[in-house]
Structures are given as structure tokens and as C-alpha cells.
Length: 100
Image (cartoon, rainbow, N blue to C red; front, side, top):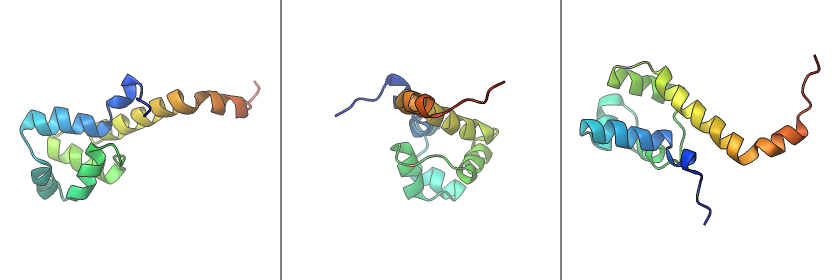
């Protein structure tokens, strides 16, 4: 089994679970009920099997009283780090940069 680099262990779902659900003493069921996000969706996000899409980011931002962009940025940063760690060499080999 391949162990992911440390940066990939902190998925947006893990942050949602550890920092927000656990931090506020909330269950997935309560978050689902109060946001309308299906429990299955929350569970998949927390398990790192599903990304946080814009609508979910908006719902989480609204619920926690924060800018939804936080959640979108968290997902985007995670995705970019993952690509950089896993595919950067391949991408750089095939891309021909625009000449100045």
C-alpha cells in the first residue's frame, strides 16, 4: 500500500471533520440536517472520496458563518498539491510553454 505524502493526508474532509465537526461538537447527521447536504455526501467528503463542490462550499460557509471561498480554496489547494506531487513531471514533459 502506498502511503500518501503528509500534505495529502490533510484532505478538506479531514479538516471538516477534525477542525469543524469535532471542534464544534457536531455530528455528520446534525450537519446534514442543518445544511441540507446529504449525509452520504458529507461522509464521502470526510473519507476523502469526494471533493467539496461549489454548492457544498456555499452551504458550509453559510452554516459556519464564513466565506464559502474558504472551502473552495481548501479543495483547490489540495487538488493542486496532489497534481504537483503526483503528475508534475509528466505534465512538464508534455507541455510546451508559450514563448515570450
